Amino acid sequence: MIEEKQKVVIVSAFGRGNWLAAEIQSTLGCEVHLVDVTDSLGRWTPEDWEGPFGLFQTGKLSLTQNARLDEEDYADAVEEGFCVWTKSGPLDLRGSHSNYLLEKRNIGAEVQEYLSDDGQISEKTKTELKKNIMNLPFAQSWLACLAHSIAGSSYVSSIKAMSKNQPLSIFSPFSVRRASRRGVEKSWDWVRSRRVKVYSKAKVKDIFIEGSSIRSVEIESDWSGVLPADQVIWALNGLETRRLGRKFEELLFSNAVSEPDWVWLRYRIDLACPSHLQESLPMKFVLIEDLALPWTHANMQLVQKTSMRDSYDLWVRIPSGHRFQKKYIEDTAKEILEILKARLPGSEPAVVDYPQDYLYDEATLGPSRFVVYNDDRLNQIKRKNYSNIHHDSTDLCDSMDWVGQFSHQNRVFEFIKSWKTEVDRKIEKQKAKERESV
Image: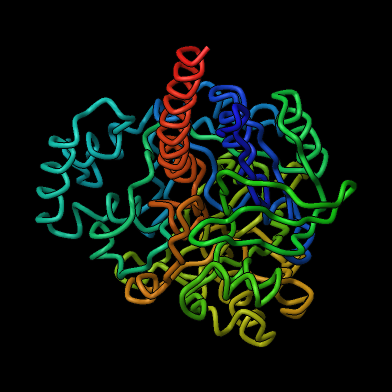
């Protein structure tokens, strides 16, 4: 006997599963349980939850995906759009002088069309554009390489970056989301308004497996007990799964989870500038000291103005092995400040807060929020193939920004939709037999 109300359990953190939970419940009519284990994954601030990539408002996002973001926290539009500041000068992609700057920097029409993709050009055209751009000299293709590199979960050298990941749609309208703990509560309220059962501040106690399927998940929260599951969405990466307990790593992964090769660190910088410099700085920009050097360490900085005057968050991508080395973090800070002083004469940059990784050890802080693997290491991560589990984490996304995360979730949703369609077909067939037997 097939139950008519199918149950989907989503184990999530940092708001990753919110849209999927709401969409599955409201569109497919399943009974959805969202288990949020953020509190089990270490001490992080909302700014770290949100990450360094910003929000590209493209046609790739659905109405409900936009609603999920809008219901959480407000966003500040970056009037200039995506901005890159190299030694050759600033390049913004939506300002009044953008066309002139693109021509001056020898960024051709093919690169612009490729990076303007919001889902309107065909895959064939996109593939042809990509092939042509990869044959260009680096001086002409670097912007496309950068769009592939910044938010990628797979790291390759800048000149080869187009071989991996999906590019950010950097010509799209761009904004900065102001993450807050109040926003997290509002997002849960939005999910609940879609009739999803939300278990906040939860702990996963056990996973029960029968044959090749996960049958239920035991949790501890305001409500504690066992959640039966017809389908499970596991929105945690390997290191986050290990954080819940080694037994979950062994249950869900075929081999030991690999440590990442790179992580993103966030510094809080006080950037006191003369008023004319302050007004000329975009709300968010990518600062690259030398395009020819690797886009890591202090050489590439993602800089974002906070809601406080003179205060900026600044992210850098560093080797994972240096994550908790205080001297390395201090030395990187010195390099950052020297670069900012040179780029902004008259400014007095100072570190207000070092990264969380400087203040806390791994036991307290937990896995880094946005991890990056060298390509060969990413391929070593092997998940067990239970018949009813769907993995959804940033290391599976073609890019780790919101568009990339939602793109992967669209694929997960289509799997659930196909399964639900087949279940409904079986239920209807079963009912037809019952009617015939009466």
